Image (tube, rainbow, N blue to C red; front, side, top):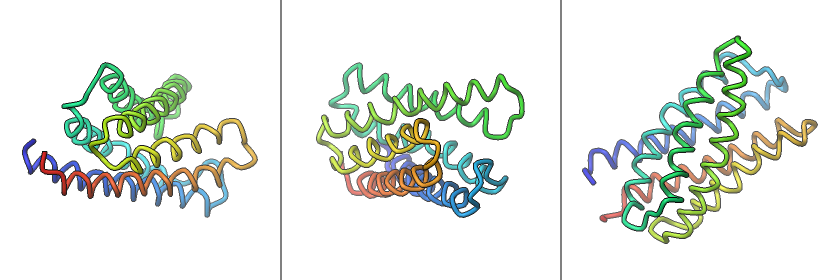
Length: 174
């Protein structure tokens, strides 16, 4: 892999993790399910930049890739694009796309976490963080009384995963 692209992927991982953490933290401290324009904007940026991180991570584990790895990456990228369509849109169609996108993104993140653990190229802890962090977001859909707490905990865990991924992208010489 081109070292410039790997560096972009590492920087993207850092930005993604921090944006998810800060954006969801602002929602939690606001104690409002609607959040703010600022928090939604920060999460939006995190999802946009995540695509570069996913592509760099995917390329890193490409040598041990299988069809499950490929589809997990497709779900991550398509899901994050669908989530972004609903963040600033008022139409009910975009909200439905965003809800479906969240499900696709969640499935992709959990599947990609499993693939990170399976391939043993990146730190297994990254995969565990992606799985646990995403599971917190999914769990919040079923436990509405704790939605903001679960969002916050999920964003902390996911942030740790993306930060560790950035270090792995920089240090791997594959």
